[in-house]
Image (cartoon, rainbow, N blue to C red; front, side, top):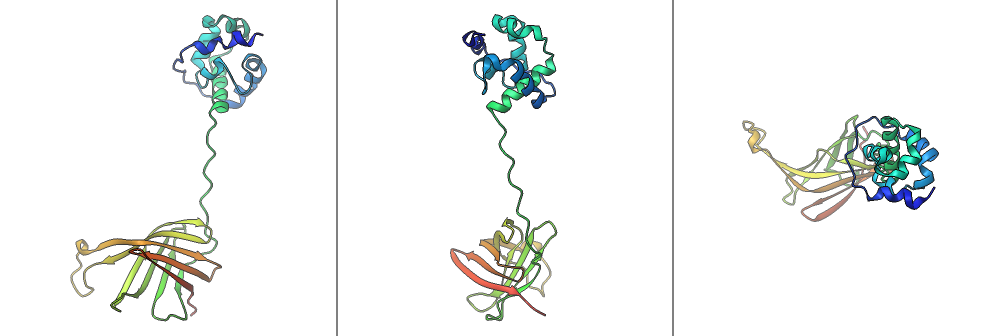
Length: 222
């Protein structure tokens, strides 16, 4: 069959496609058995316009493109079959992007008190939810040597041993004063990353107002 005659369908304007359940695998069988003779693979010519548009294919078969009517008309395609063919053409010309990789799963449950034995006086409390979300609190001291707290309330695993999230400072009412929720003011100081070398050792990295800090941490033994 003359390919130049078949591609005459390419001159048509696309029309809205009919809504049918689509079976791409069945569409591939039909396309390879019948349509490929004129439209090749990957599809060319009018098949490109027919991508996910069974109505346009039906119009061509019904006589809008005489050569198409002569070649394909005797097969008496059902609307469902044309929908399958259109879906297959679409899948070849515009394949769906691959699904994103699954989110990393933490290698261990890191919930515990963590510290650096060589730097007594500060520590890190890690609570790991079954969902994988980590809530971490660091108790330390500020430049004025007064007690100071940082909080990482959420984040995400970038690897099975690496977790990162925003790093907050929080101020609020004094412990001996009536609690005023309006006085609680969290402010993001930077970001924090936990990198574990095994179940009991790791590195805490965080930034505060542009200053980077790196601390070795280990589970606190009791």
